Image (cartoon, rainbow, N blue to C red; front, top):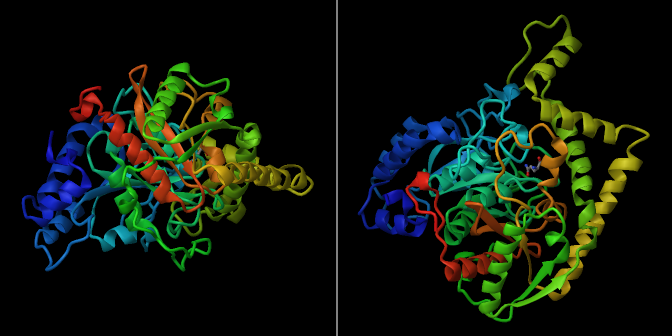
Length: 488
Ligand code: GLN
């Protein structure tokens, strides 16, 4: 145990009561990163100097109350803009990009005076499920370095699992927070579309992208969500909703709560060990007074195909801006303007990003638009209606987060189709714009399994409450050996 293993609330109390200084905490985090990140490679940039300088200033506590995240170290996925600090999206095309502004979600953390430890590795432009698409290096799973941490927010999940920092931010377009959280044995949450501002998040698929927190327990996750949620005039899709007190919702009372279990999420393809852990977790919820019933989400089988049309279509449009003129890298050896565009994009983007740009451009091209893009939009509506119907009668939907535990590096990277199928339980949630959380629910084959809890739009309090009730009852406290933990 070191001080970094404490919860955010405990650290907050210790800072407030002057038992520990923010600079001591920052030093501990940076030391732990130095000790183990050569094995995990969660970071693209460690902001050691700035972190220490910032934390030193915070040692002088202001008068009155300090915010919950005051002096707490955290990490940010490298697709969120941080003024003056490199933001690469793990892409060569943004290898030198230093943003002149900070993403709203990060700004909100800054307002609480959290301490930035660094920017985390990811699949290039958030396209991937394993971190193997980072153009710099792959991140390893702290539970087993031969396995992937998941993706695309693999660095953010791994750094929390490794005990470097108590929390991090990731982004989730089709599962990129929940799946790595599941693979690394931490909590990860994708909020309702529009709850957290996307301003300053480098766009992948704008109708699906959402920023959300990773932490080691549900209460810390709620604390970080509280800090980053809220309306922002800089994001036209930001929702004007009242932000409730998420921490107050964690009262453990799920008696009479109605839980729906979608039969399609336990169908062919799921590892039986994973299914067993999830079913045991559902029993725990039942023992706490929840009412559990099976339901059907009949359009689930179209979700992966629908997503892999819509997301690449939006990506092809969003990534058109990387032309060598405005951002990042420009090809040197071009003969004319068109040649410069071509060479910049050919050299700057990796294979998966190119694949998606081509798929998306094709789906949007005239003559094919109705057959692919428009039809996928209609399927998206059907998937959303499946959920609407279930939520008429139930409070939450509970399922596995992913069909397997973390797979071995290289196991799926040669076959994009099997990689895409891994997102089967997370993608529908993005398509429907709903909130979802992944909470650890045990081990299968020695690796963590995630329980996914999905709620109605803007019912973050409910899914946090269910996740917290489960966590308190199950008392798993899963920690990889590398972070000094015992496998329990
Ligand atoms: N794995 C999915 C993809 O490759 C989801 C990525 C994400 O949520 N950013 O698109």
